[in-house]
Length: 102
Image 1: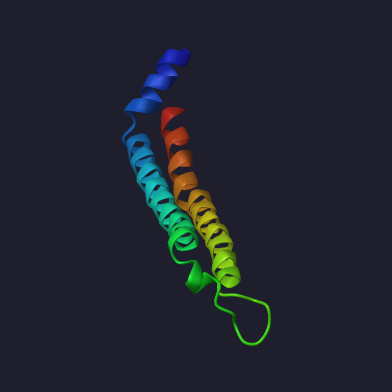
Image 2: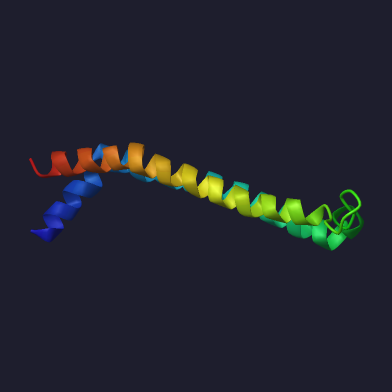
């Protein structure tokens, strides 16, 4: 019985749609995160002068807000993924379950 259920799920067009959407969205967010993270690492490696510039007369440098921005970006794209997963992906999953249980 499990094999039949699995086969029905796999052959469902909405399941294929869910897989494609979730996979492509995940890769887009992964690429964005890698660009931001490795961009920061490249700045650290090759443009230390820029990151070490002082902001104002205090001790804070440009690198601190840029590094903080990387962390904030990570939180934002995680929230974007969670929101889409809780709406569009869950709706597709529920539709698949409803169709397969018929």
